[in-house]
Length: 111
Image (cartoon, rainbow, N blue to C red; front, side):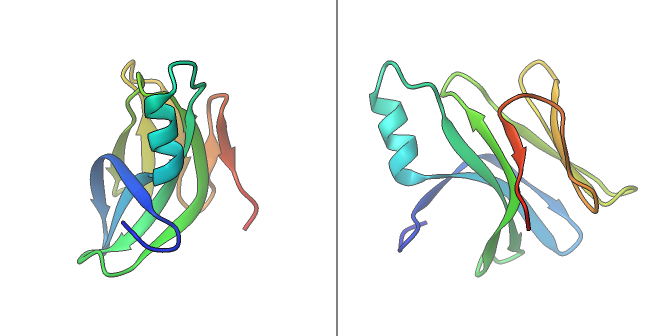
């Protein structure tokens, strides 16, 4: 996405109800980390988009990730929640009515 707040979407989206959820990073931060060997990571934010991607809003969940890590989203329709996990199937966060972080470098922001 270009514009005032350019972002790059990380990995694959997941649909829950009438929305698509996806993690995104600030494009400048992502590129800086990709070109800096000593990069400690960059922050990704969970976004909620309408199905045609004409509107995407950031949600109050952020996670600091490195280029070597992957994050995977899953939708739990029974609880109406989005779950994020890593390559080792470690649960990173759950986003829903009561968001929860399970690991360091995950933050639930104040609304």
